[in-house]
Image 1 (cartoon, helix red, strand yellow):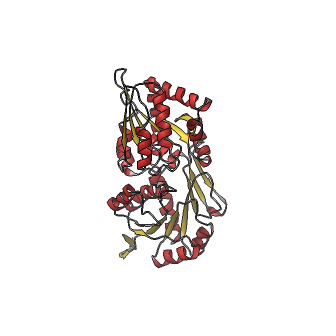
Image 2: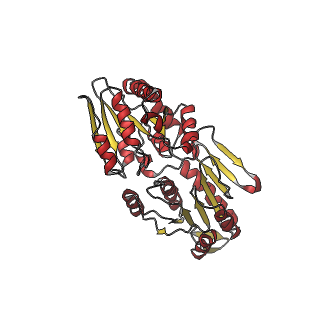
Image 3: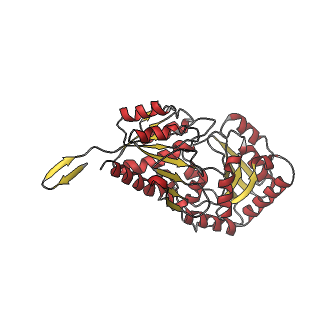
Amino acid sequence: MIVNFGNSTVPTRRLRIGLRADASPSIGGGHVMRCLALSEELRRRGAEVFLLGRAASPAWLRTQLTDQGLPVVAGPDDPYELTDLAQDMGLDAMVLDSHTLPPECSRALRGAGIVVAAVVDGTARAQEADLFVDQSPGGDDITTTFPEGARRLGGYRHALIRGGVLAARRHPERRATGPATPVHVLCFFGATDPYGGVPVAVRTLLATGAPLRLTAVAAEPGLARAVRALSARGDQRVRVIEPVGQLPELARTADLVVTAAGSSVLDLLCIGCAVAVVTVTGSQQPAYEGVVGDGLVVGLGSLEGLRASGAALDEGVAVLRRLLTHAGERAELARRGASAVDGQGCSRVAQALVALVGGSQD
């Protein structure tokens, strides 16, 4: 990068930005995937970007990191070790995307003069940051100045959507499935599905009795066996696949997606999918209520409710039967979702972060 001062030309160092996030079978890959999305935009703007964390699994996520060429460095949880590493690497800013990092991490980093951005989900968890990015579904977009100069970028306009998702985006007015064509349903519950959501959701879909072509993503062999053991009618076809990195392209071909109420819902809305969501943990309830309340998805209640026999299961079956048999409702859901999540969140967040770093260097 070159900066001109009068008649002289002075070379400047590229910004160096760290992304602190982890992935594992227990927490999934959502934190790292959000950081990957942001890294694409930051690198496009000329920054050097590094992932600081643990991301050895799942395998498809390692492939994503390799394909993007994003350097991975072991990221400490200890505040002072993390700060020492950031200083040794000459980082100008650190993006923290974690529900478990102690709040002392952000304080130590800021105390060392490093700009901190925290990706949060409805709560800052006591982290102190210069920039808060809250892409929690629901409510109006929020762009507010917090005390002591911190900014918050919130709402659907700041959803961190990676390039692979944008490439799969389809026209909202995609042709609806005709009455003679079985509806194609994609069912997935993350790369690890620790709560066993896929067999429960597939059983609920089959209980509708509606014709369908169902693609179920099974995170491990036991879940695949559970899905294959379910009984289907002759006009209900079920295909079981392993987790894949090309999930956006797969979602693009589906008429309906059934999934957990996590961050991947924002990807699906951006693509233009009709989506039905399930909560698998209590922590997903605010996001669930947000997207359902905004009319962007259809809610099926909790996974435990669908797992048990009773009114919750009956209601879930009825909701899915209506979606499977009403192409117009699916098309309207897809239109509203694509309109709400325009896919430019990474650009907006990167611009705000680069501006903060630039200001800190003046």
